[in-house]
Image (cartoon, rainbow, N blue to C red; front, side, top):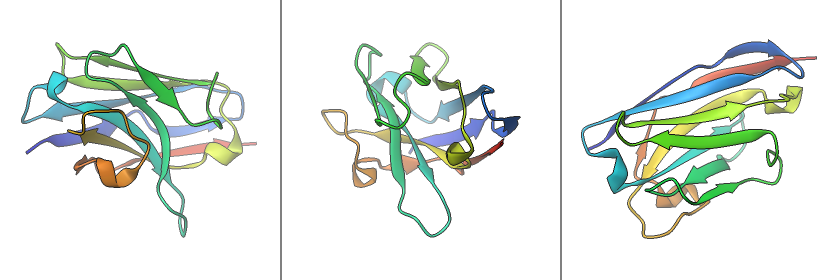
Amino acid sequence: QVQLVESGGGSVQAGGSLRLSCAASGRTASNYLMGWFRQAPGKEREFVAGISRDGQITRYADSVKGRFTISRDNAENTVHMQMNSLKPDDTTVFYCAASFTPQLSTRPEAYAYWGQGTQVTVSS
């Protein structure tokens, strides 16, 4: 079992920044791929960013490339996502997720464990 707890969400104005964090417990962080997803009410869960076990490979949704940066600290069992140049369209709940698949995936079904989510609100 892996427990994931997100933090760092909040309210900012357009153009501002937030840093989301995900603390993992229950298993060694380096055993799993990590991802960030987001889901707006009435919409499907959407891949935002993912990172490999050793942190060397990252992947981003086109909508956040150049604005968001995912990173991980396996010694601290944490994953972070720095979000810059935030837009009102980024307003939604963000989720941290852990996957045991061999390769980084953008599909929610590939992720076995999920956090409770953290709200990000960007005002214009």
